[in-house]
Image (cartoon, rainbow, N blue to C red; front, side):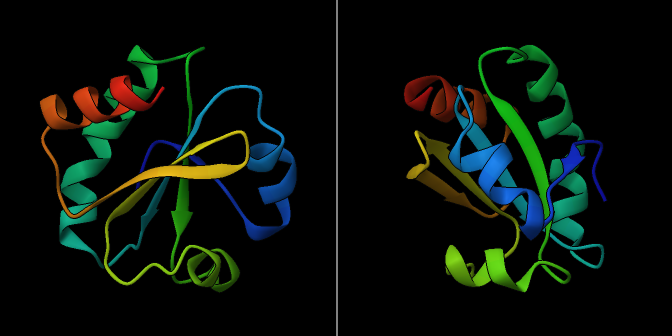
Length: 107
């Protein structure tokens, strides 16, 4: 699905809520074609933003608690979290340029 580190509901508190830097959650699923197209873009941006933000992949099919918590209705959905709170979200396939701009504005 993605090259990003996978996040499970059990890791959420430690890796997201208490994170020292902003976190980007990529809600996706194995069967989602747009998610597969977005994956290499996110992997590239994760390397580019290393140390400034942490990227996690959230499998929507196996993490219903997180899907419910963030009221995810469409895939892919990217949620930007700072200080344990959502500050922005993007829904659907996005270009690298659009993502870089959005991430840069919120990080």
